[in-house]
Image (cartoon, rainbow, N blue to C red):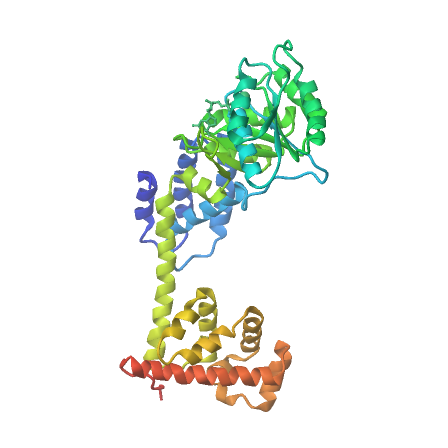
Length: 441
Ligand code: GDP
Ligand code: MG
């Protein structure tokens, strides 16, 4: 929990409404948090602009104070920008699927090639690693060592064959994969320390030779502000279909993720988190969002606040019931919704003495049944919901028509409701609470 955020947090805690001043003050802090995480300035500006729009239009939450509410919006917005649900790899209809890796030297391409190969093999694929970095001495050997560790074949030019032509190696590797039934080809390429046209031209030539299903841009999460220029160069020079962030085990807050996502418009597919082959996972936008903002703790607090609010509602309901107020169809529906959310509570209730009957009722509540009950209750007038006794034959017929069910369905629901109502009275009595089970006169 960064000091600055917690500061703004307590400052705004006592206020009740989401004012422009609240939004501006919190947005300023978020802006700094993003810049500290090395998100590129234009990306920060665009993000803050969208944030303000959304925060100003937001309804005031009863559970959260304004700062909490804005931070929640920030987090949601970040998760959305970072890609919502992570995308999977695109596979070719006709194997082999070709995955080409591109990025600056040292970004982690070769390491990623090994990780991907291991990961794909564990899923039952037969990958082939292809060494197309013939620029750096030892690059081929590095891939061979990784391939051996992953238990995956490496396709490389014969040693001592002069410099070798990476485009030809790439082309030949596809033929090799076909002959040897390799279903995924991972093409490792050379990078330079900076962007240069020769490197980009070579990458584009390799791309044209292998016609990849994915061109994965690998970027070191530590690069910070340079992320935008690098991503733009690869986007324009080779074309990118997906991104992998590497070195997320370092202490970078990972603002590059947001910058690259904005610039390329392409999803972040994986996160690389160490030098070992198993230090690798699919990308989780929500974790990344928390990391960029440096606010895991804040989010826990927000969740707790929302839960507490739920508790408060439940307590109000209990007080109402046990205080002897009438249990209405409206309450019945609220409870059904709550029970449905809780799920296994039906089993718990079943274990309590005298609750077996309720368990059976709850077990019946599959989705379609629940939708039906909801529709029936929503088709009633407020008067009917609070005083079900007035539900005579013609009212029941009208409700059945209105909710698209039979009159029998309506009758069944009302019987069940009556039982629940009785049970509520008994429960109030059992707990010995004042006024338990009595209706208000
Ligand atoms: P390439 O030049 O793009 O092929 O990059 P390499 O795969 O050779 O990686 C460059 C260096 O970074 C090597 O020393 C790797 O061990 C290291 N490296 C790669 N990925 C990661 C990572 O996720 N975490 C850490 N800590 N080191 C990494
Ligand atoms: Mg390499």
